[in-house]
Image (cartoon, rainbow, N blue to C red; front, side, top):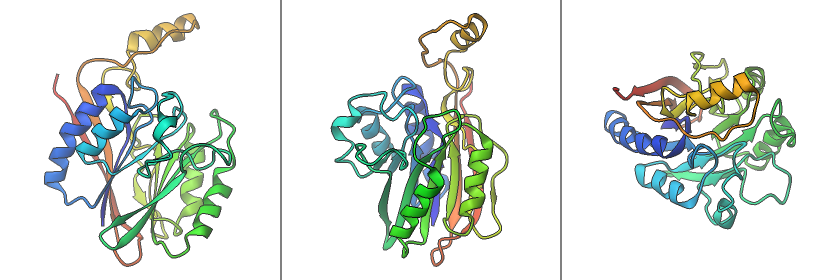
Amino acid sequence: MNVLFIGDIVGLEGQEYAERVLEEVSRDHQLDLVIANGENAVHGRGLNRKAAERLYDAGVEIITLGNHTWDQHELQDFIDEDARIVRPCNYPPGTPGRGYTVCKVGSTEVLVVNLMGRTFLSQLDCPFRTIDAVLKQHPAIRHIIVDMHAEVTSEKLAMGWYLDGRVSAVFGTHTHVPTADERVLPHGTAYITDVGMVGPRDGILGVDREIVIGRLISQMPARFSVAKGPRQFHAVLCELSDETGRATAIKRVTKYESA
């Protein structure tokens, strides 16, 4: 089974470029499941119905989220109805939406879980205890993909090692800068600290760089806007054993738009 996981999609620019590159990547690779982090898909903050439908039309099958989950209030109107959207599982009980979903790839069930780290982010429930509870509820599923949306590398690495041999893959998201540490851990879990992002390459994490630089210098609040210019596409392609669900390979997929 070939799983493509796409890093944080930023703004309309990211949506458009993901659409274009996915068509190319699908021609080059036999993809069985496409997952994307969409928490920055609308103006860099949150997800709405229009953006979700555009990503589905492009070939994305599951959308994961993160700390900007509720920035577009419209999401609350339909998140309960759409099992393809997964928000962090460690939100408190009663939060709208779902923290994991089970999809079918042929006859194989795949469990997709979204977790959010707590260091420098919201003080949610413990992601480690949360994933333990989810895995206990689904003991028969062997193909398990985890999006670990977190600020610090240590928390993502800890989750990777904690779940080695218990899930198929742990993909880090949120910081938008791809890391070069993709590997299959000793017990068969594919891991990368951060997949990266899809959107403007010459901004800062997809945001207009002059706004970010000005804010850092002045220490005054400023409204962020998505940058313009050439775009980048960061994803990982992971190969899973059909029988065991363990990862056999992981590699980065990177595309850049010419200026």
